[in-house]
Length: 247
Ligand code: NAP
Image (cartoon, rainbow, N blue to C red; front, side):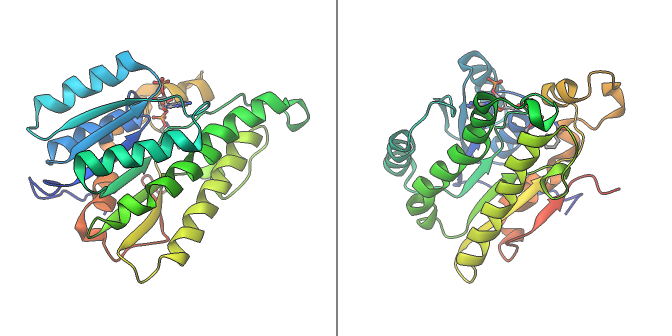
């Protein structure tokens, strides 16, 4: 699956929602889902960036793209419920949901993490993901084989000094995925995680400012796992964490 390539129109007729679609890994995933024929719903907080992703998506696709400007830090349950209603009326079903948007927060000693910082990171990375998933379940159930992908990190199953809030949020993300996968086993819904590994994005540069980005894979280079888990080739895969860059 780490060299997976879908058929050219593999996602034709499918609708896929990507969070954090304006930049980094989410932007690349949105472009590739569009290229393989999906209608892609681009969710993020910076409209200009979403518009740039939109323009790139429509270059290689005749499918329908939509922009949802939403700051997941302030969004409420009602926002996600309204989104689900709109998706159902516009597209009828949701075939894929890529939970990609996240905040890194500050890397700092545990004792110095402020309650505000902790709440902000947990709100975006965990709570918003929970509310969105819950709201989308009915519209995901309308798809013949729906795939929900969560994004974890190497610190999502082994804690690391100074990575407190982010690492805790990724442990919670893996836990959420595992609970859902177990609860929906033997249904047409699947839930998995992807751990992209060190990838050339703004978030990585913030975490490792002294690193040479040229030594890192680009988002485009780690896409096979993202394509595989959205493709019907993975309909029997659930409860797994795919590691894009195994050591
Ligand atoms: P990125 O370049 O920082 O992109 C993150 C995206 O999430 C941005 O488009 C950002 O919007 C959006 N976002 C952040 N807060 C948001 C909010 N409150 N509401 C809506 N959208 C929000 O990060 P990335 O490196 O592509 O990371 C993508 C995923 O991979 C994350 O889940 C990250 O934890 C995970 N990951 C990355 C690496 C890596 O090496 N890059 C490694 C392991 C895991 P703006 O464009 O407005 O900022």
